[in-house]
Image (tube, rainbow, N blue to C red; front, side):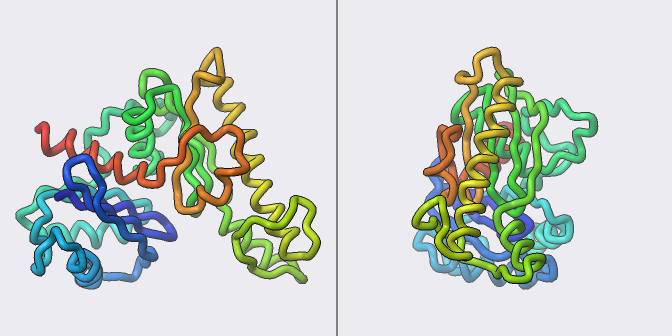
Length: 265
C-alpha cells in the first residue's frame, strides 16, 4: 500500500491507498519540533491500528509520497524514510520531481508544493480549466488552464487566522466556535462573529472564484471550482461558485505524483 503525507502549517493529513482507493486517513497537528524518531513512533501507532498492516513499522507499506509546506518537517520526514523505510520507494515533492503540471509563474520555485499537487489532482478528476479553493491555514485559490497549466492564484488569510485575529485585536471579542449562526443578522456577539466569518468567507470564495473564472475562459461556466481543506465544509452550503468538494485532493495528487516518478519510471 501507498502512504501519502501532506504536511500543512497547522495540520498534517495522512492517507493510506490500496491501489486507487483511499482505505484509511488520519489528521494530526503539525509540530515543527518533532524529530524523525518521534514522527516514526507516531506513524507506527497510527498504522498499527489498521487491519491491513502488520505489527512491524513499515510492514505492508510499499511506497511513500510526501509534500510539505514546512521545511523543517520535510527534513525530518526525509530522515524517517531513510532510517525506518530504507527499502521502500519514497517521493518527496520538491524541485526536480515530475508532476506533469507546467507552472506559468514569474518564479515557479516559490509556488507551494501542495498547490501544484492539488492542481494535478483537480485536472485528473475534473479536467480543466478549473480553480482549486483550499480552506486551510490560508485560503488559497489556484487557477489551472484547459491544458492543465498552473497559471497563478490568490492567497488570503485563512478562517482560523481571522478568528484568532479578532480575538486578539478586539477588546470585547473572543475566540468562537466555527459554526453556522441562527441567521445572518446575529442576535449576540458570538452569532455576529460567526455570521461575519461564515458568510464573509463564502462571499470571498464566490467573488474571487467568479473573477478568476472570467480570466480563465471565455465562458466562466466552463470553469470547474473544487473546494478542499479542513475548513471547506464550513462554507460549502453557502458558496454559489463551488461545484465539487474533494477532501482528499492533495492525497490523490500525491498518489499521482508517486505513480509518475516511481511506478512508471
